[in-house]
Amino acid sequence: MSNKIALYCRSGFEKECAEEITDKARKKEIFGFAQVKKNSGYVIFECYKMKDVNKLIHQLSFRELIFSRQIIIIGELLKDFSEKDRITPIIDSLSNQIKEAGDLRVEVADTNESKKLLRFCRKLTVPLRHALKEKKILLTKECLQPIVIHVFFITISTCYTGYSYSINNSPFYMGIPRLKFPSDAPSRSTLKLEEAFHIFIPYNEWEQRLQSGMNAVDLGACPGGWTYQLVKRNMIVHAVDNGEIAKSLIDTGQVRHHRIDAFKFQPKFNNITWLMCDVVEKPAKVAALITKWLLNGWCQSAIFNLKLPMKKRYENLSHILYKMQNQLKQKKVNVHMQTKQLYHDREEVTVYVQRIYNRVL
Ligand SMILES: C[S@@+](CC[C@H](N)C(=O)[O-])C[C@H]1O[C@@H](n2cnc3c(N)ncnc32)[C@H](O)[C@@H]1O
Image (tube, rainbow, N blue to C red; front, side, top):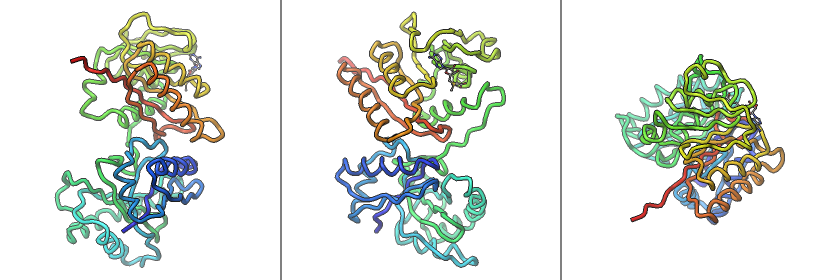
């Protein structure tokens, strides 16, 4: 039985990841401490009580976590493998933890230093998968089994073995969706919005939520990476920015460029589904702007970036999000809200808000 979980995060944000898991576990009366190694790309959270790991994994939704890319229940660190046989100790360790898993991921933390180790993980995956299937720890056919095995390499001779549940984890290898930069997009930040769609909107809702013909507003749109994503989905976009928007976007006939201040722009018609905002401004000011749009009923859903304050990031961000949720609640605007530091986010996080309408019977 284990009392530890591993959380993957952006390198440099281990402190925020640790503060968040400690805080959110404490709110569920689960106490423990986080081991943090700067720029390692992961955090280990150790519960004081053995049985609390299970409680934590069942009560804390992965979607609630801002700074974690993945959450895994792990055993003790395996050390000093023989170069000749790394598979046997991994299998022995896993056989004490689980049976009948549906998937295997051999992973590393996302740091520059781990790139070489990642190549080794890829090589190890095939023989390890084969051996796990022989021992019936991994099922022979990839199926809808809820358990995912993770073998998390720290160095070539040390790793954690563990597992996550597919209903409460990131479905992506290393917690990172692999996206290809579209060569005709005006900026690399196009990937940020595309990733946000993958992270926040379940695939079975894409057709309905990202429909052709929808109206969208993109605040701080230039040069047009986010607008590109909307245009690609055949939406009509109001791009608000004093800068220059890519001509290729204007040429589609789907984009109207408004050269005005995002904080003064108001939609003329009540038909905006999506509000996007990537303006570089103080996070509290951006949050207040989005709150205004939601309170006025000017949009149905929003995706926006909050640049992280330099000090006490987790504390300040929590305060901003709490204030926003409270203001909406007070005015009886029901929303579903989720915040994540995406792979393509640097010193920032991305927030998704969807208005929920109560059905009148
Ligand atoms: C990070 S860039 C946006 C990149 C864009 N999302 C893309 O994918 O290409 C920030 C943009 O916000 C714009 N901006 C900053 N303050 C603004 C304001 N008050 N009103 C409108 N645009 C603003 C800047 O001109 C800049 O083009």
